[in-house]
Length: 444
Image (tube, rainbow, N blue to C red; front, top):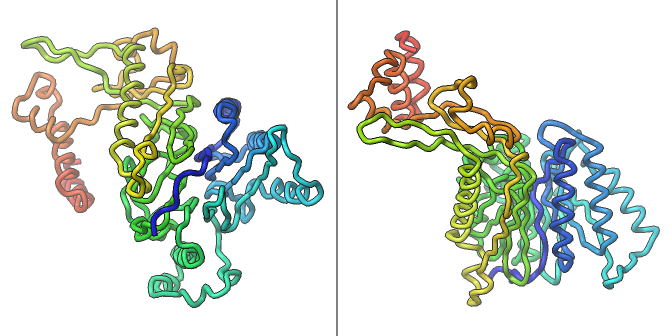
């Protein structure tokens, strides 16, 4: 059996993390993008509506107003609970969910002028459904899973499930239940598109700096080799495609850790994919360019607005190349070249007032800021931060072999820095032990 055809049409909207600061920009960007695609009836919101570090009720209510507005337009909304969307044991839109269910029971669906009737599903428990005749399984982030509501699931218990149950660890047990639940759903519907809000265990995905395990509540990475199913999620903020898994990333950057990432929403239409960049906010990290004069030590020039715009263009090119080079989960199952095409819609202009720039410099000296970045650029950006350049081991070794005047002036501390970097690169697993040894020798 092959993967289900990607012929359904929908917009995929990743992690929103709405808060008061970005509420208006988020809602305006989403409304504008959705309005530009009136043909798309199915909108899938992939979870994490709450901002990482705060719960802003007014922002969430404004987002709920958007859900109702789209419903009145005849859209079908699938609103998945994410890991940030829990207040104690309750979903952040729990009251809205109950109110909408009551409203739906009292009033029949009314069709729009286009003959469409809207729907909203707040998904807080597993849901099996069909979208345009294709089977879908929605797996929201859950605090627990009641396996008793799935008849016959106890017959599927296996060694993997039993072993994790014996640990007594809450997250491991929840991961085991997820493992079993997927087996159950696959038994009833082998060819599934699974929309979820979980990690996968022990996999380093393209562009990701972290790997996760079953202790983080995760799906089994063995499922990534299952050619009968495909996975779609947000949750991880950097988008990527890997085997049978497509991660949409997030709608906006939520911290400087997401530097040099492009954010937006995705569209599936008639087997083709599109990416639409949203300009809600940006975190750029740039190392200043250098001009080298023959026989002289390299001198750095201030960063300009043209450099920043060029950096944005380079990020767009890298983004395009990354997804064009990755194999798509449905690519091997079609002979139609058009179905493999990915279309990118990047911002024609960069909103500098939404950009926080981290500028890598050799020395942190805010009093000399004009030497690092032009005054014009400083006034146009939301913020500029300086960060110390991290030299590579190869650079340090080269400076050791051919010391310049700056190197000679840096003294003993520079040699210790060189030693620590070398140990960290060559012996990452033993580095802590080596560092302790250096402390014991009173070298650091």
